[in-house]
Image (cartoon, rainbow, N blue to C red):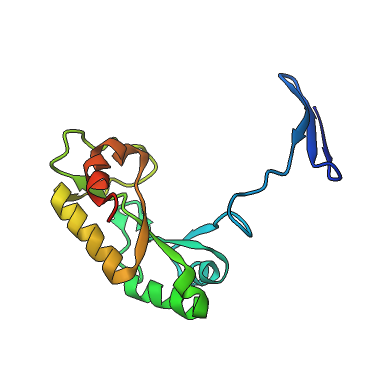
Length: 166
């Protein structure tokens, strides 16, 4: 297998067992300037402060053990305070992401599909309850991104439809 990167003309040549590429542009420029948004996730103080200084989007996580949420996890308010402190004036430009793998929409016709790797956490809510909860979380903490698991996509679709444009 041979791989060659010609920095002067920004092309990539590759010759391998199954395919060969010659003259492929190797430096695709992002649409966003100066770079693509950087998302960093973390649950602890050190990682959240690093994210506050370096990232554009911060996914605030929770400590989860084999038996579910860790009762010693730091409260969300404290995690956001760490981010604000470390970000300083750039906090106004940061976007916060909320991981909601535990939400189960009870009035959805499609059950949550277990995807493995995560403890089975369930916080049952109707579509209306989930919409109200997520809007309140956005208002209270500033979340503008939601992370759901692949197994929630169909189950969560009614919530996303209601949140669209809000």
